[in-house]
Image 1: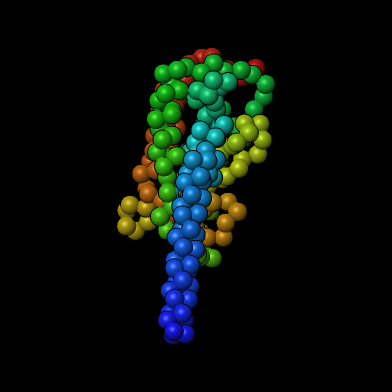
Image 2 (image 1 turned 90 degrees about the vertical axis):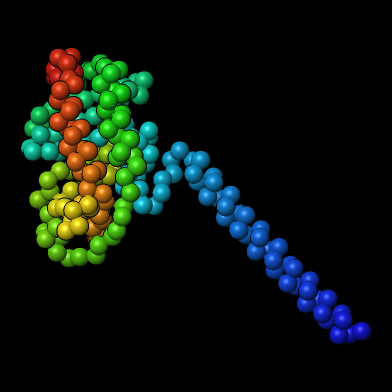
Length: 203
């Protein structure tokens, strides 16, 4: 009889452990779901620190020119031309064009989906082109504040499919899909064709 009782106790211990394990995994799943539903949560391998809908402005530095993209009060993107400026804006207004805003938003879908493919620990960053970058990207949560993220795009990786990127504030380099680099260049070039006189005049 004592042996039978011991067996029963052992079975209950196993069942209790299983219930606790199932409860833990369900809790983990619920946490992941709540994170995915949180509009400010991004995957740890996301290139951007926030979803694109929560970013108020972007600046692309390419071939000596700074191309700035802002949102108006309705959330529509517009091109804010500054040429070779430092990005410091004087007081002036812009009217977003709906068609241009939609075109810019389509370009930015790719950036929103950009993922870090690999991490590279190195002290020789100049060997990867990020010290003299082909393109820089700055992201702003507050259009009048400091950038929340800065990126220097370096050389294409030997595989021809990836691009080295230095995220300011990090010691390592990251690699992302090379087409993301081309997409940003295409956006900067295309934006110049979208502008209207009301969008390029500084007071």
